[in-house]
Image (cartoon, rainbow, N blue to C red):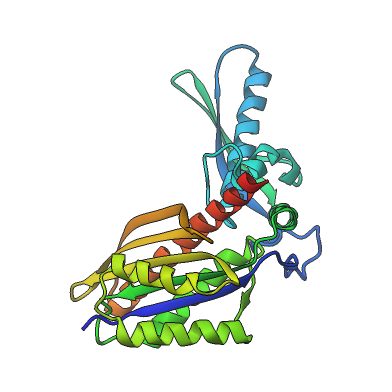
Length: 306
């Protein structure tokens, strides 16, 4: 029989900004996510015209690419012009702290490549993300949301609760970057947990489509909710490797039904000496990527409501 894992993140919107945990002095060069750190980047510019201008163009490109890498540490990359990710990238000069270290300059096929170490202020990126999200939350007073993801076809030899806790942690970490805060001790949270226990115990053999419809029907009966993220991570494995697929979607609950905000799907594969480690990696990767993407979709949906 399939073993089903339900990961719950109970969220209240809007929320106060989360304070960054940073005990380091501002001038220190650190490698943590909340300080200034060097990011390796390769800037590219057409090798046409004045040599100094070409070099400066390549350095500017290196700076922008470095900020893209740093922003992806906190939120999902997006090509949408109005996305939070592109808003941060557009102001990339704000996040460069000090001089760029040029490691190597190389001309290749009419282009100048500048290999650099770029000092990026990770803390400022993180704080600006939270500020932008908090402002948008105040303009769009979203109420409560629930995030449900199940993991199916878990090998019998693995500890179900360990994987459950790990997946939940990954979802919490990803959504905190968008100022979501995990709750769970209130009466409404207890009501949701009761519903989840029933799903876990009585609907283990439901196909995903039926599981999704059941979740939407159940949550629509809770007027305090207006957003649900439902999904599935499916594990397949041999003796030493694990493959997995992930599908998740954000659904806006309405009085007369619901509409989809966005969806995510991907496949994963991992080879480890221990099958448990391989399955854990697949579950973590699927949780982190889907959570970041759907949080960004929710942010974009808020913008449309302005």
